[in-house]
Image (cartoon, rainbow, N blue to C red; front, side):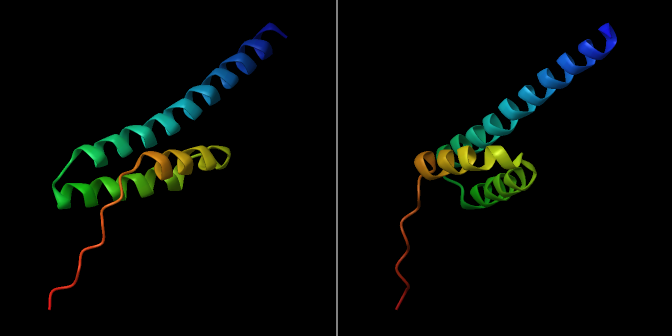
Length: 82
């Protein structure tokens, strides 16, 4: 029974760690996107952000989307050349 309790505790600790890791990765990527001015680098970081959202736990998606909506700086739309 002791072994079962230890395994359960480790499982809970690992899942909590994964939660924090997924959200912190999204947060770090948003910061990197905001701090870069290179368009190509931003595109690479946006793809990484999309990949991170694809593998994040479903319960964490609303929090991740909230981080993106509130902290990601939106680029103004460019006017087309005439």
